[in-house]
Length: 370
Ligand SMILES: CCCSCc1cc(N)cc2c(=O)[nH]c(N)nc12
Image (cartoon, rainbow, N blue to C red; front, top):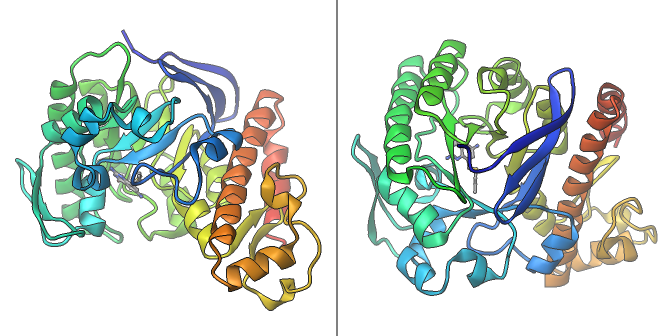
């Protein structure tokens, strides 16, 4: 019995819209999941995140296992209580962050060993420990299997070895997770840009059996075109009746093209990270508010985006970013998350009304016009 019913209410071509029903609330898909790396969506309160319409946020096992630590997190009641977020939380398993953030790290069959980027302390992460941290200490509603993601471009041999290791780790993750009524476990497809490896990965993940399936190994430097070429086949290798989550993606145009190809869930640090550095996403494309052209622009950022930033002028936001004021980081993070939620809401509506193909054409015409 799957713990989280996934009800697809409409399709248009390969695009789908629906609801993933979890114990802590419904997730409307296509969904964008703000990243709350270290128990916070940076520069935003949970009420501000909720106000954007986000149904779920992400947490990060790598960061939380280093600080405040899994056992302390459990003693404090778990991540939901700790940060005051009562809706669903998905956590990544930590392997990807070890390879991108940690100090010296080693990947062996049994485990990943690494030194903390914070204080150099030594750590061991096995598939079993990752599941224990995510599901039992943090209390994630959706946990991810431990996997190995190769960088791009990848030699076929390295991609195959990482995909095969990820399958074995997926089986160990599932064995440790077991069957749970109110929590879910997602598997992760690997295989880099090799179609046959992704097919093997998908088939073997389904033999193990997961509550949802992620497309890993993308947004690692391959660029939009190469990513779309993989998405021309990868999503439909995964079960149609379960959620498909594209990890680490992406720019607004990436989300539109991935939804067109059958993806349901997304996460990316871009809206908050770019916001902190002065980039604002709008229906007409990105604006770099550091640019002097905004110094006396009295117009709001994007009146169509509901949120506090639409009450301020571009000139004021330009000033705040140039002055490196905290309020600038807060307002632009909030604006960008609100934009991503408006984008996914618009895609849900377009698919429901059978006009997503036109929406996609209009978005391309308008969004890149800037
Ligand atoms: C909080 C961040 C979640 S997504 C991180 C991420 C991002 C990208 N781009 C790829 C992967 C991947 O292949 N595997 C895993 N576990 N995570 C990935």
